[in-house]
Amino acid sequence: MSEYTLDLSAPPVDLTRQLVDIPSTSHEETPIADALEHALRDFAADPATTPGRVEVERHGNTVLARTRRGLPSRVVLAGHIDTVPPADNLPSHRGPDADGVDCIHGLGSVDMKSGDAVYLHAFVTLAAGDDLVSDLTLVLYDGEEVASRYNGLKALAESRPDLLAGDVALLGEPSGAVIEAGCQGTLRLRVTAHGTRAHSARAWLGDNAAHRLSPVIARIAAYDPRDVDIDGCVYREGMNIVHLESGVATNTIPDEAWLFVNFRFAPDRSAEEALAHTLEVLGVGTPEHPAEGFSIGIDDLSPAALPGLHQPVAAALVEATGGRVRAKYGWTDVARFAALGIPAVNFGPGDPGLCHTPQENCPVEMIDTVSDQLLRYLTTPPTTSAPTPTTD
Image 1: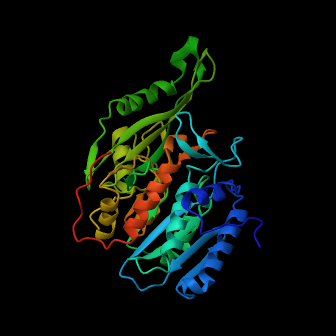
Image 2: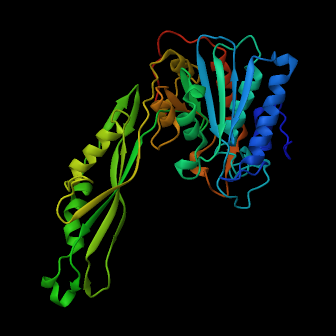
């Protein structure tokens, strides 16, 4: 029995506060996973739900619920349940923000327990109803805010991809109540130049590694990034130095200089194509065969996700939200669904700029708006043609 209880009949705003008030810092998600599992199992066993038409599973601290209605399509609703460590922002409270807007304040209210609450509310509201047009899979997973090896969605995608199967996936990441389609990929390389240390008064006896690295810096600085339009969403690429180090002492020629270069790439490039393109720009060879005096290491490489808005079940979501859609510039777990061949979008309440801040808060109106649009989407049969998205 969990030490916390959840009232799944509560409206999304109240359910947001219930979730926020269960501490769930990364690696400490057991209490909230227990509460979610217990509440969902009670819901699935309720005679009003028609037992047997909802199944609940738990994998570590990831809780999954699925309808079994035999409907023609399946929509996956996913959200992470962990948060960063608290910053004197627990428990939650409701009240105006600095601009007088009615908000839910507290850790995770934006990232992303309001999104979890909206998705959870939609699942329990529609799972047994006659209006549902697509079967639902609800995935509430752990370990998103830390290294990817702890990510519960990643673990499920690798061990039981069948449980994540669907025609479209929605991730409740905060997106300002606007659809943010797909996501950029991200590549981070460490490029190191090697030289010979010497006294700066006898510089000819050394080989300045910083000078060796300077042409690479110049190539990155001169890089002309692309803007790529996919399904009406414009993804802006960028290649930038994000960390740079060199130096031994103020009178010493450095024998090593290195940098991290980060390439954010559009979804029309595969991870392999992004790596090949970046190495071509840098002009220092490959990790396996670097140019003389250099070494290259791949520090991180995560693929992008195509928006997939041409799919009828995804187009219906665009229509239900008034056609407001934009590209996702960061990387999110929608890429994990894309790797499984499932189009995915980010759609949740809250201002992403407030994530991880002590002032984290989510407008009540935004929670209600996303909830209303999601319920409308899940009860409206998809059309055969996609509406034209409008940028926001």
